[in-house]
Amino acid sequence: MAVKVLVVDDSSFFRRRVSEIINQDPLMTVIDTAQNGREAVDKALQLRPDVITMDIEMPVLDGISAVREIMAKCPTPILMFSSLTHDGAKATLDALDAGALDFLPKKFEDIARDKDEAVRLLQQRVREIARKRFLMAAKPRAPEPLVRPPVVGGGLGRPLERQPEPTRAPGTPASFKRSGKSYQLVAIGTSTGGPVALQNVLTKLPGDFPHPILLIQHMPATFTAAFAARLNGLCQIGVKEAEDGDVLKPGHAYLAPGGKQMLLEGRGPGARLRIIEGNDKVNYKPCVDITFASAAKTYGDKVLAIVLTGMGADGRDGARLLKEQGATIWAQDEASCVVYGMPQAVAKAGIASESLPLDRVAQRILIELGR
Image (cartoon, rainbow, N blue to C red; front, side):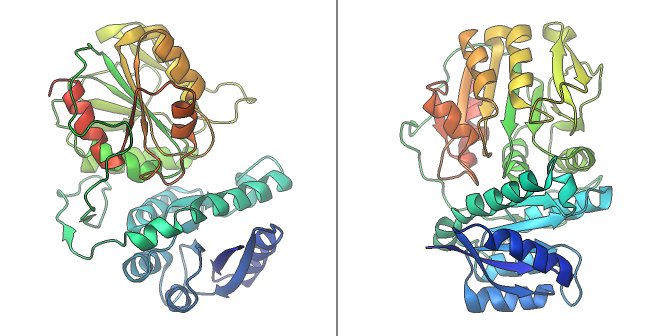
């Protein structure tokens, strides 16, 4: 059965363009369009699409408010279209926090190197998030929120949702036990669904976290500074966009800047970050494989590396190098992923020693570190 898509945008040209691309895929069909957020909510309730593509700035009801209302009334996978600006980044992060699963630049030339690649990427993203339709329908968001900590420096403007009790993944122990290994670095790689996943993990870590944390999130260059600032306003640990020459400090997380590669030099307390342009032939900037490989060379077996939700297999090769050095590798489980691509690649290769539900990742980290 074809994936049913509702296309929402106030531009008739953009609605038509997105519809044409989606309808080119025999596995998908556009069942209707809407020109503002209010129409989107009404048609989502009436038509029950498998996926919604959503603009952010629209009349009558904006995209963020529409996402929030749809997620409360009929949870549906939503793909946002965003401008690659600072304001666009903040709005997109708000939309993800409201419940959208993924985003793409509204200018298709920013998506990929050529038109055909952009078309394939859009179709792939819609197909991938459509797989979450059944799970979202089965586990709607509870209406009663928890109070979020005060927001400073560009933090989120909405409370945390009350999450359902996580289900234990196959192969994951009911109660975690510390392995007894010693660590000097935590590294986390992620892509699609990563902003919400990273927020879930990092907001649960204490301010006196004993090691530095490296974050590699596939994200445009204009988004990473805003995302780091947002996390910093929510977390007890410090979070910043990584800069060349940064000295790694315990209790601080360093987000790889979009469009660049993040490497390490030195060892232990004197280790520094190197931020470089990198090779244009590498698909991802930043690339999880590159940072993980650098961590393997610099820290050896003293690394705890975690691969969270994301499309593709970035992180598998770097994780293999880490494992060869004796480092510990974990992966997010399938049930809690937006896209079970990157974690699956690590798990199928036999590299990950544990498969963890997202809501238990932070707890597992703290137990492993003896906290």
